[in-house]
Image (tube, rainbow, N blue to C red; front, side, top):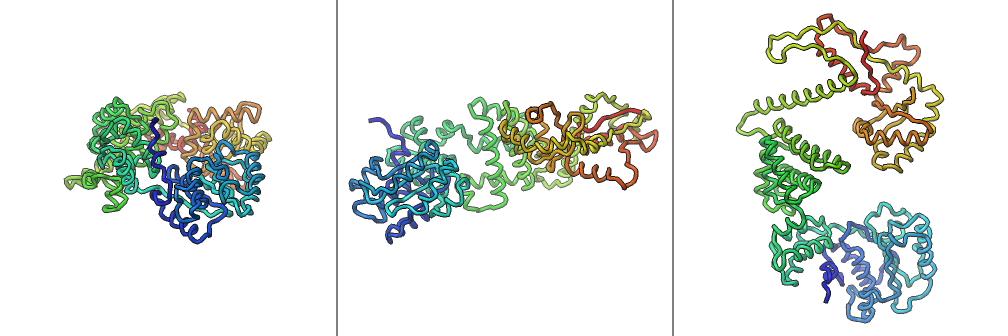
Length: 577
């Protein structure tokens, strides 16, 4: 006989067999006991938590020849045939495949006929959020006033996509993720019945990976049994799932804490050689730091005992870091995880993230050996290193624009004096052209069709639209569209070459001519616009003038850097008088 998947073999056939949904089972059984069941139910919740299974059990309970009762007997002809899917009056519809108005109209036309095989017609509509607006409208009236012999059960993983008019006509039940303890108990029961030996830590790891979905846990167990045979071990689970043991992460975290970049990169290379994926490593590392933070901030929490097998070991590792350091590291990993989704080199981003963590660990890890002065010193060094990196980036931008580097003296030595810079006045070109461009008819045309630009960008790539919608066009000058952003993060992401090219493509398609995207912060634009209002006196010329002829070149470069940060690289031009 062909093998049947475990999640099908162990699919509950009665309310008693349900795992982790006691609040729903008790409510439905009370309704069946008192004969007060509704004409329409909405089952919502994560995948694999028993929505469709509960719908079928309810269909059997209301049609059981020995009932209706709080449990289907699973022995009468009606129960057996409903389990097999052979009763025409119990219809299961996949709304993802039958989402049109015609299918729903067909249901609406048939509900008025009495059932032929059982006492109650039951329509189970799975993934109901996939129905079209027209289909929902066709279902609405029937759902509100169905014949007494009809019951609708709607199941969905995304209830927020359903119209409020549909939700208000149903009794709603929210299915919860199955707790780790209940999952482990069911997996242990399955292994015992299948005559498979299993380690408790292996079953616990399977349950954690399933993220509260019993069906996912059973599918994963089935796969591991096929690999390991008659015994399920922790190492087998790690091999099959691509997961990593906590001791491997502990070595990686120790390398980060010691600022040993080489050791951290060697561990990552080992993970890759073992077949682990970079995105899985990143996700698991975020969870590991999250667990360290929870152990440090909420010791003794029940949530920790479910996720962490050796809490004491975690607590020892967590003592090496401050809470602020762990939060900063999680933020860093989360940023690079987001970037990884759009990268063709995810392993490189993982390595960069680890190098970043090593630098953060030196500046913000918890002090050991009672040396607070050393911690402050490391913090200052870290700040100086970050500032040097920013200055190097800004210098590179200036060199690309053709600005000659200023002469400089020795770096070290407290008494060394910098060499005087040439007496050159460097000034920044003003925003006058863009301020005047607000009255240009071309700008009015840009504003009128901006919604079309957003729509076109959304068609090309919805993630870019999510960033661009934060900005608004404020001026046009010389085939440049100036867009001002409220959020610096949205502006920076929009300025990425690939995103910028896509937006400029949309501009050309909508306006019929090539436009170049130029960006700045909205607050800076408003400040410049307020300064340019008539009646406020002569306009102030924005320029950088050295305090004296002996001023250092570094001071001038710092003014230029601040101007670039204030107005953006595209709006700043360096001129020598």
